[in-house]
Image (cartoon, rainbow, N blue to C red; front, side, top):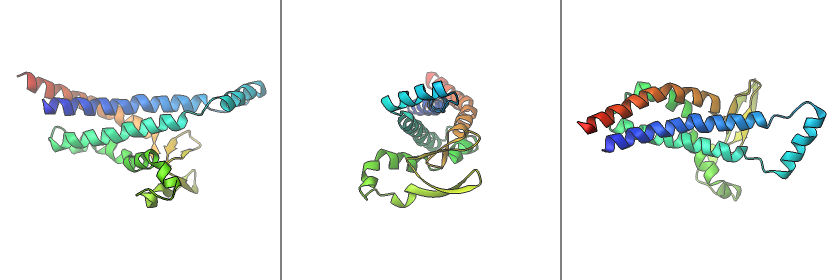
Length: 181
């Protein structure tokens, strides 16, 4: 039973990376500033009256990535999947747990606390520029790649999650079938 639960949960969380990542990118597209003056006025009015939800959607995305990493680790503990299969996703996920933790407890960081303060602000290269960016910010490069905290590429993680899902489906099915025998 445990194998089936772990395999199914890992599969769902990795699937949520694709789902939530697409929500983030859809919102990014809707938030692009229009060039037409009349549309620009409507766009500006909308964002003056309505909260920008991109930060919230980014947080849900990072949570999906973080939970995926946790459940993939559980799969590995049970030796249900080869590490070479999950490695590209896990490498791309990189510092998702750090970014999630800092965002989750940012009120502490604002007040000079927080136990990962040294990891909050990083220096990175974006479009041939060296920038400093904190874990709660987002950078979008000239190609439209969304980098949460300057370190987590939404597009790259969606791609890696899509590649991983078939293997996780097989893992889930194998765990389910072994339970039925």
